[in-house]
Amino acid sequence: MIHTPLVRELRARLGAENVLSAPSELAVYDCDAYTIERRRPDVVVLPQSTQQVAEVVKLAKRHDVPVVPRGAGTSLSGGCVPLGGGVVVVLARMNRIVEIDLRNRMAVVEAGVPNLRLTQHLAGTGYHFAPDPASQAASTIGGNVATNAGGPHTLKYGVTVNHVFGIEAVLGDGWIVRLAPVENPRELDLIGLIVGSEGTLGIVTKIWVRLTRDPQDYRTMRAVFNTVDDATRTVTRVIAAGIIPAAVELMDQGIMAAIEETMHFGLPLDAGAMLVIELDGPAVGLDAQQERVIEFCRDCGARELLHAADSRQRERLWQCRKSSGAALGRLSPSFLCQDGVVPRTRLPEILRRIAEIGRKHQLRIVNLAHAGDGNVHPNVLFDDRDPDQVTRALAAGRELLEACIQCGGSITAEHGIGIEKVDLMERLFSE
Ligand SMILES: Cc1cc2nc3c(=O)[nH]c(=O)nc-3n(C[C@H](O)[C@H](O)[C@H](O)COP(=O)(O)OP(=O)(O)OC[C@H]3O[C@@H](n4cnc5c(N)ncnc54)[C@H](O)[C@@H]3O)c2cc1C
Image 1 (spheres, rainbow, N blue to C red):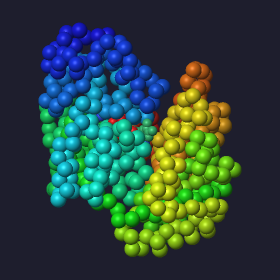
Image 2: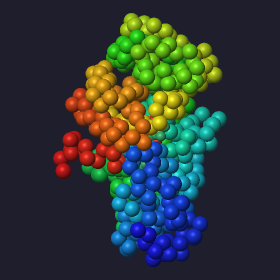
Image 3: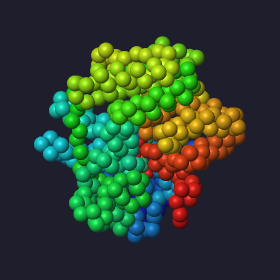
Image 4: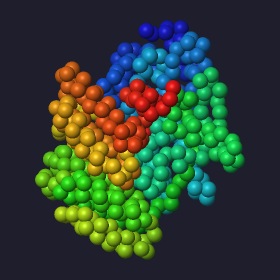
């Protein structure tokens, strides 16, 4: 239902060019990367300042209409789909890098700045923004804050909350607040509360982020194994030895086959799993660490090992991992990318359970994992034109997450709860 007086007032405050209400314009905002549930907003606004966001929130409150914030819409759990209709507040036009303060290793950005743009902007300074979700070319830093995004380098560098110094946000009544880290442990850590709250507590408009020194050097390797168990045993051995790689990414046979078909890296199609392992830090000592990692890979049965001799080869090894999302398009018309987490040592068990669930629902499931964190992304392949397959895919997705809970894990590691997992919250938390 279009709220005509509200739309009129929004146009008057924000300018007609920043308010969308035609059905064809709204259609663009009816889903995110989790495309199963769709709902068109009643109106979309594209504010250009915190003040404008506050005005929108106050107006919506006065008209008793719900508000849903949206960054780039790359969420894989439906978080920015306005199931109850209302106003979608798109932060994309608030995309200024406000300040770079290298002496204090800090940057101030508006919420709509795409993640990768900040690191590109910093090229040559010796610093970067560490959270690097695989969606970083598109996803916004505001969206990363809202979902407490992780990424391949989370194992060593932490998730988004570890890189936030301050937040400006608009609360549900239009009040603009600025939050700073607390020094007294008896005070509430409000930044920790807002980061990961997926827009339920307020709309983040500006962020003070930590900048991380670029590592002096890298060692990047690819190891191919006959079984997933061999690959996950390697991860446990490496970490138990006190080596914290910058990243440890696991791809199973299904994903490897899709990547090979698309990109022709020369991956063996009969292998069970592949790891991409990256070490970084001061150049001194990296070779010795790499030798140990190679030794662990061999001990655990790696049948093929490749290490990047230069930055071009490193880039190519990473391409292997980063092209996996696109390669899935080769396997089926649609896929449901799940996100669960288990204690690292239980990865073999959860991957076996996932295979069983796939067989039960007669659906193919292929897996990617940020293996160092125990974060697994099973991709349930289906055809969304077939309602029966949609039902089975949803059931399989739910069972996967229940299996994560049974393995001592949780229903999200980094994609958030969104609308997809809200019903599963009661499995983990009291009312
Ligand atoms: C190919 C692909 C790879 C991905 N890889 C990763 C990965 O490695 N790690 C990872 O963590 N995620 C990953 N994701 C998921 C997604 O990219 C992240 O959750 C990302 O942080 C979402 O950012 P966004 O700007 O697209 O937010 P949106 O999708 O627009 O919104 C996500 C949620 O945050 C809320 N929100 C958005 N902006 C704000 C704001 N300014 N204030 C308050 N609330 C807001 C929305 O209401 C919604 O609930 C991936 C997604 C895709 C499609």
